[in-house]
Length: 439
Image (cartoon, rainbow, N blue to C red; front, side, top):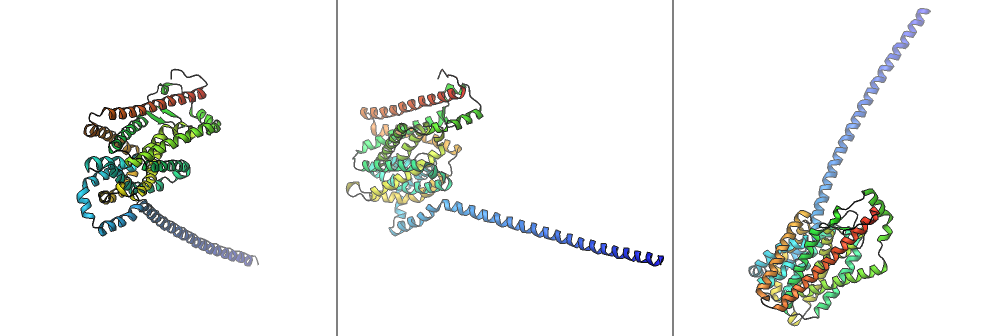
């Protein structure tokens, strides 16, 4: 009986061993199944990443094409009109120097606070021998295409501009259009129109050089002059500055009286810019930039608009002004009607500016802007010299008016610079609790 019991126990162990072996086999098979599933998941993930990368490339490609959508829509219309009216060969043969100039002008228009009119007006008047009214019409018409394409690209890349500064753009555009309409009813002699152009460009060159080389804006928001001795004064640590910013945030809200003054200044600058555009085909963009850099950015810490955004907004402002200015020009009859020569010049240049202005908007970087601005300073000095030698000559009154206007610009810059000093001094006194002297 004992042997039989021992044999039974041995059989049970064998059965148990077999069961364990079978379980191990099943477990191994299960592990292989898990590994296979993991491999399949990895393959699926890799394929998904490839598909997503391909989709991202496709989206980026579509976005790049979308940026130039105005040009893609405009060029077929331009080509149809040019062929239908048999203007293609004639326009290019007669106005190819203007076409070459506008390639450069369109790049300036899309990357600086200067519209293409800053090149179109002097070249068309001094080189092509257009009258100032023809030069104005050509400038407005060509910018209504090029600047519109650049604005589309700007709003594609910087959609926050309308959200953050839409009210400013609306007020500025409205006052620009009012100035444009008023200027349409004021007759200005050709010589005076050329004086307005020369003075405005030279004055804006001074403002742009001052803002670029003498003023920058701190992270805290207040302006600071590079040449100021205040850079050597005591500076508080950043955490204290941020804390003070948070505690005084309610102080940045504009008071009613200050808001009214600011609105009056905005309306004045914009009206002058619209009036200038009605005479020389440009000016609204320069007036906006001057207001933004010299007036708006002094209001408080949370209102600073950086230079690139000021430039982008000036493109939008000039787009609106040029479109409505073109509407006024092409619907005018009589002696002030748009001439056939202007239409021919438009056909010769439009295809270039509608591509050049958006490409210029892609150059909104400090490296490219600095070079283009330096080139503009040279051109501003040359056009003042050439206009003085060719047109003004020994006209003492004209020289006095131009000199007085530029002196007025310098006086305004001096007042602005003193405001910079005052604001910086007050900020330092608040942060350090000490009176700052010697500024």
